[in-house]
Length: 514
Image (cartoon, rainbow, N blue to C red):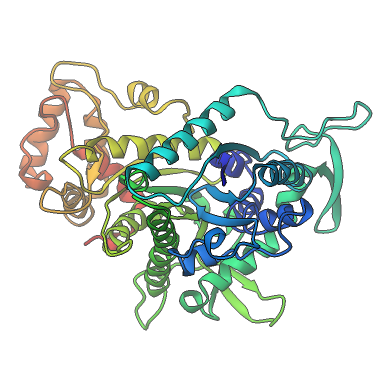
């Protein structure tokens, strides 16, 4: 038998490479619903390998190996999920036919999507170290093939056509926007044409949580942002150590069970988050009395309030959503809490998250890149024996960009003896060693006990010299205003906890503080 692993490359760039939310939504829908679940059976049929293929048998009956049990079958699904899929063929020739057909279909229907294949003969339904060794060799072949050559994933451009204003590819399709039409590339069209399907699928996934009163939007400026504070937050969370869990699987059945558990996990986590978010806007005295945008349902004519959130990736332990800027850090905290509470096949995991809060018009891909950097920064202290769930965030009020380390060095570092970085974090969310409660406490003190003008004076004083800081502290002492958490000095060992507390006040609803 021959095993074939299909790996979708640069998923984040494919989804977030555009600054248009509608394209991001369409790209996410392609990855989640179509690239494997629709295109694999179609490619197998066109290649003459299988007229029908069960996409759920591996999940519902993980210990049933169909090529052993049904001699007439030529292929079965090993598993699907986590950005890759494993197929097992009885004959190598069938695997090669499939690769040819599948690659052509992706090029025709989803231009710009990059895929790599790993192929290895001699697959048996081994267990233990033999199975792990075979998987290791298969992954080595995948990496070798991925690096061997650049795959053509876009149709060749004709020199006689104009370029798409969004993708710089050839204009091939027409799309209508209101009463006007626009010529765009097939790559952009393949994503935009699926936005309605993506919306219907999202509402179906969270029908019980959203109900008839709420809906989702595909426009970033409809999260209910106030005009003078038009910010969005991109939240990205990733489970800790899941890659090692897959490596440790002792059989194909174990891999299938883990893949199925991870897939169910993401939906369950987001169901909890949606239930919580909806509860903030309901009841006689809702915790958030924001004026949400209203949309008319095309089918029923019913008015629905637009929730200030839009999920973009719900894939296993990898979750990304965009929301109203003031909810970013709070919902990230809740997300990490739910991710730890929700077991995968009976085992609880920790996770880390990054939150980038930017102007609504800020380039979306740059904001997502910042979110990824923040997530990686949050993961650093979680490794080894420390563990736990960690969160890191950044607020870009001035529109700065570049690598995270450069931003901190240029914008959030104060020179001088005893001084250093204004930004704290990452913050641990869980356990006795949690540092996030200290941030909450400080914010509450500044929000309820300090005059707002003095809070701003403190923020300015953090960047000033010793004389200004000593004068400020003396004045605050005279006014009987104490620093949060029994603080005595603005800086200690080159760090200050107060800048984050002050900065986050405008981006964290006061009545959501614990």
